[in-house]
Structure formats: structure tokens, C-alpha cells
Image 1 (cartoon, rainbow, N blue to C red):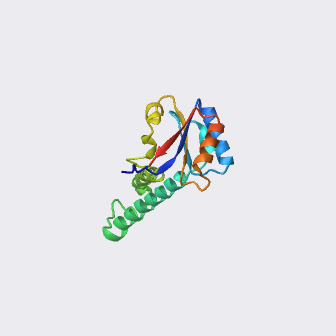
Image 2: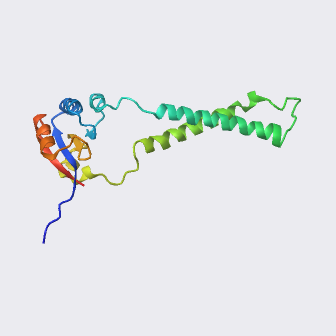
Image 3: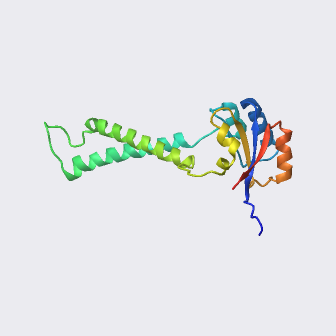
Length: 181
């Protein structure tokens, strides 16, 4: 009976500290690897820059959501107070936009905040209930406390198991591990 080997998700290398991880990540990008991710117990700007994670669309998406909320709030009040149920209270004109500002402001904040939360989850690929890196026992034991890991995915066009393993060892990795799928 033949034993079936699970396909490889990638190779993971563990480094001593965040600086070593950032240097290794930068060198991996220079070597042409693009499908990779780094894992640290706390955020490090140096590693994020080495991965090329400099920009995000989230502020623009939040702005669009806020403008949508502002528009909906203003248009809805216009429809209610002028078209649907016009009331002349105290001789005030029907189009009394200054009195509509609290609701318009609140709708702007509501739509902007909901857009931020929903798009943050979507852009981060969350919720994600399973990830292959949790198949590596050393990652589970050290990723949240003192481990600094770089994982290069097998889906990367430049990935060759032997060549990539030797490349990661040449970067000064403490250990290079297979990440089964």
C-alpha cells in the first residue's frame, strides 16, 4: 500500500530576530519571489516594507462609504421633508438644510465605519478558518511568542523545492520546514 504525500503549500524558514527576517524577506523579493508572507509575534514596519506592503485601499474605501452615507442621509431627508410629508413649522422654508446636518453627519459616520470594518475584513481575507502554516508544529509553538518566520508558497512561479530550500538556508535561517497543504 503506497503512502500518499500531501502536496506542499510551501517552505517556511525561522529566523532569530525581526531584523534577520526583514533582511531575508528583502533578499527573497530581490531574488524574484512574490508569493510569500512573514509572521512575527508583533508588528514590525521593517518586515512590512520588505514584503512590499506599503499601501492600502482602505482609506479610499472608507471615504467612499462616508460620502455614500452623507448622500443617503441628505437625499432621504430631502425626500421626507419636501416630497413625501412637507410640514411648515414656524414659517421655516421646506428646504431647511441646516437642520438636517445632525442626521447627515451621523449617516456619514455610520456608513464610513461600517465600510471600514467590512472592507478591512474583506481585504485581509477574513474570516479564515484554516491556513496551512498551522500544520507546522514549530510555528504553532513559537509564532505568538518568539518566532520570526518567512513562508514562500509553492504557487510562486520562481519556486523550486530544492532551490528554494537552499536559498532559505543561505539567508541564515535557523530551520527550514515543509508546510504541507
